[in-house]
Image (cartoon, rainbow, N blue to C red; front, side, top):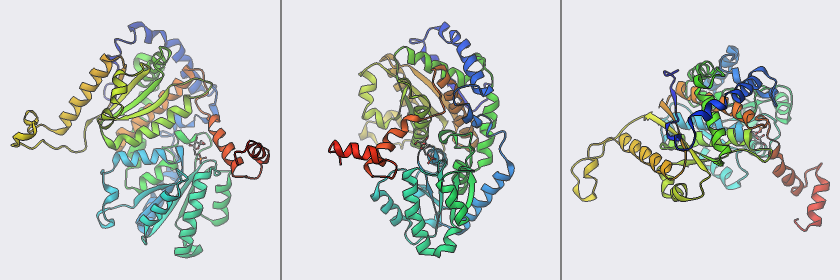
Length: 451
Ligand SMILES: O=P(O)(O)OC[C@H]1O[C@](O)(CO)[C@@H](O)[C@@H]1O
C-alpha cells in the first residue's frame, strides 16, 4: 500500500477528529462498500466505472488510438464539444499533462493537434472567439454527450458542424466528426447513424462524471498525444489498491470516512487546494464528481477549490479567520515537472535568504506554512500527495477520488449516481425559450410577467 503513487496523510486532523472516530465508522463503511460492489445500492445501474480500467475492451482501445492518429493527420485543431462529465475529465487530464503554454505555441511547435473545448457554456462571444482562433487551420470535432440532448453542446455542435460543412463540403466534413454518445438512444446517436459519423460509446452503466476513463476522456486525451494505456494502467492499479473494505487498508475509504466525520461535525465545505496551476482543472473535474454525487436530499459537502498561493491573496483571509465550516484537502505534487532556482546576487529585493533555492522548495514551504496556519486557525486539513505528473499517477488519482465518492455518498445516505437537481434550471430555460412540451410553464412565466 505504501508504494502507491497517491498518499493520503491525515496527521493534521488530530485536533479535530479523535483516534477512535475513524474505527467507529468501519461498520458503515463495510455496508457502503458492499452496496457499491455488490450492485445493490441506490443507483447501482451506474457503477460500471468501478472496473472500467481492468475490463477495458482492447478493440475499443485500438479504435480510439486509430481515431486519434487520424485526427492528428487531418487537423491542427480538435474541438471537443461537451459539458460537465462530457468534457471536464479530458480537460483535467490534458491540462495536468501539458506544458503550461502548449496552447499558445505556433502549430509547428506542437506535435499533436491543439485541443479546444466548446459547448460548455452558451456564451456567443466564446464561440466566436474559438472560431476566430481556429482561423483557416484544419480542424476536427469530437462531440460528446451521453444523453445526446444537452442544449449547450448541441448548439455548439450545430455551429461547428456548419463551419466544417461550409469549409470542406458535406461529405468531407463527415470524416472530421467523431461522436461519443450512448449506444442506443438520443438525438446525437440518431444523427451519427444518419450521417455515418465515426462513433464511440459511453457505456450505459457509467455516468458522465465517472466517464473520464471511457472514450469520453480517452479520445481527446489520446488526440492530445498522451498515453492512455498508462492512464488506464494507473487506474487499474488503483482498483486493486482500494479494493479492501477494511479502513486501515484503504486510503480512499479513509478519505471518504474522514470527510463524513468532518461533515457531521459541521465542516460542510471542502476546498480542494493545489499549489500548481496544472491542477486547476482537476479541481473542476472533482467539483462535479463530488457535487453531483453528494449534493442532494438537503445534504452533502459543498465543494470548492483553492488555487494557491494565488487564492491566498484573495480569499485566504476568509479561510484563516472566517466562518469555521471549512476543511481543506490539499492535493500536492511532490516532484514538479521542472524546477527553477532563485537567481543570486541581487541584494535590493530582500530575497537574499532565498538565493539559490529551488522554487519547488519555496512552493513546498508555502504549502507547509499555509497548512499549519489553517489548521491552527480551525480548518481541518487532509493531504493527498502524488509523486509526479504523469499518466499512470493521474489514472490512479482519478480512481482514488471516484471510489472514495461512491462510498462517501452511501455513507451519507444518498444515491451517489443520480443528479435530479440539474433538471430544474433546464425546465425553466426550456419554458422561457418556449420549447415544445413546456407550454404550461411558459404560460405561467408569462402570467407572472417574467417574459
Ligand atoms: O453527456 P450529457 O448527457 O450531455 O450530459 C452532460 C452533463 O450534464 C449532466 O447530465 C447534468 O445535466 C451531467 O451529469 C453530465 O455530465
